[in-house]
Image 1 (cartoon, rainbow, N blue to C red):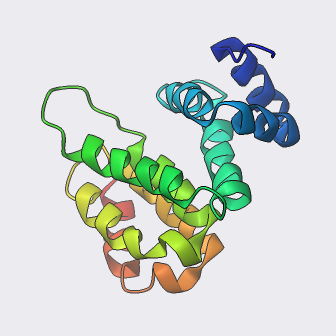
Image 2: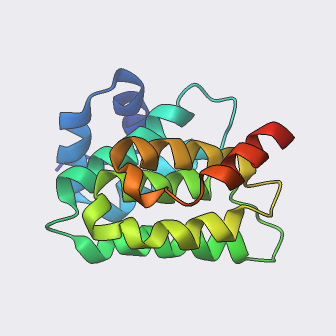
Length: 157
């Protein structure tokens, strides 16, 4: 069996090879999740946006078969946004938003939790805006009611 490495996952994400990434995910979902999460943590990394998009693709393609796995990603993101130990996962709103956008019928009910966990924290606000856009594109009904707060937030940033 081919070893799943951080550099291997990065190469697939950079190449936009969703099929190969799905194949690796099927071999070891937790390892792929861990490496993708690392890729989301560097804002200036060109791989950041593609890694976020990969979470959406994985959710869209595999959440029916593995609903708890993706729910756990959302839970971890919410926990990371409330963690007070100094390790700030500033991209957590985007990651959770990508999972929600990948399967809005299954995880859409968590968008409001995501929104309220991030909206008042300056560290998370840019990531929250990106999550809002991604979820809005997938299912606009999930973000209705938050538009005014998002407008005010955009003006403030």
